[in-house]
Image (cartoon, rainbow, N blue to C red; front, side, top):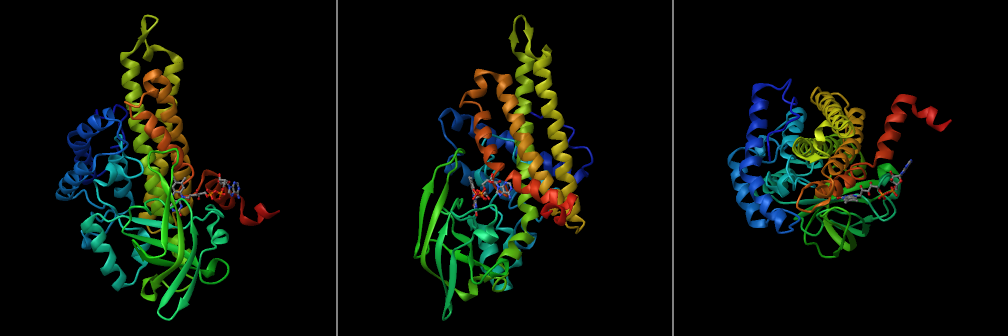
Length: 395
Ligand SMILES: Cc1cc2nc3c(=O)[nH]c(=O)nc-3n(C[C@H](O)[C@H](O)[C@H](O)COP(=O)(O)OP(=O)(O)OC[C@H]3O[C@@H](n4cnc5c(N)ncnc54)[C@H](O)[C@@H]3O)c2cc1C
């Protein structure tokens, strides 16, 4: 992939961060991009597994491994701001959704594990980092995902030293490939009646049914019938599951926002290059105002999305409550990146629809980002509550 033509995103970065960004850019250009070109021609929907393994070893050596996991566990230990800079850079290639490089940079253990006890951390975090293990998060159910505190019906009942879990989860990404998962289940009533459990896969009593969706990577429905989980595998205390999930929301939102910014920028780069080369009616597309408008609007939206993202990341790094800012960043970047990719497809005309180009792949992947990690409507609702006051929403 070419150097970005709409750069400027290096402004304000320390030399260390520029170096990190540059290392990632070069890794993408020299290692990931050549593999992607042939994978795309062969109609693949992800990087071939042997290439992922080979590239993982290289990324590990370069220190581009598990960006947000603390260094003591072998991760890069990036706090929120360096993390979003790295994650945006790592998302500027074809197969960057849902995971940059299809896992080439390792899989960070779910953030919620940082609230685990020492024994759980020792058992799960190091192994996840070392072996690039994947996790699933089982929060959403067929009864709903926007409002899990009310929708969760899966139940966990204590039987001696084991919790026995029964219920059904919906849209559980990676449940078909994960080594471990976190299941949220009801151990009581209301918000404070939800607990979180670490489940080792494959687990007796769990059956997984793949559910295909608009993006190239599907998701799953998960049926749990008398799944026995040792009481040592409860995360936090009984009834704390929902609070813990809330505590780690910010990073999830920042991650999606950074990914969206990276992809939108890559899409605009392609469209700018195309508009400069392509001639119709005796003139370059770039000379047409209707084409310029699409590119300029996309360019401004990407810049705005990045500033909202950086603002949220800085707030988080300063130890402030960044939930409001992260909601805004996630909402704006997921919606504006979708518009940017749509515009890029329009500028390329027929080529924009071609499966040989990454645009249609991003278009479908980004559509999902407007629903996961809180759909747009829920983020608008949260921001409305903050700016209008909760009481005004009831009146
Ligand atoms: C590809 C994919 C991967 C996913 N991966 C996971 C995963 O790994 N783990 C997991 O737990 N979940 C996962 N999800 C589930 C996702 O988090 C939910 O789809 C999402 O939270 C919305 O829940 P829902 O689909 O039940 O929609 P609902 O909650 O039924 O909402 C339907 C629509 O109504 C809107 N809406 C809801 N309430 C309001 C309101 N008060 N005001 C206005 N509008 C409202 C919503 O925004 C949405 O547009 C995944 C979903 C997809 C599509």
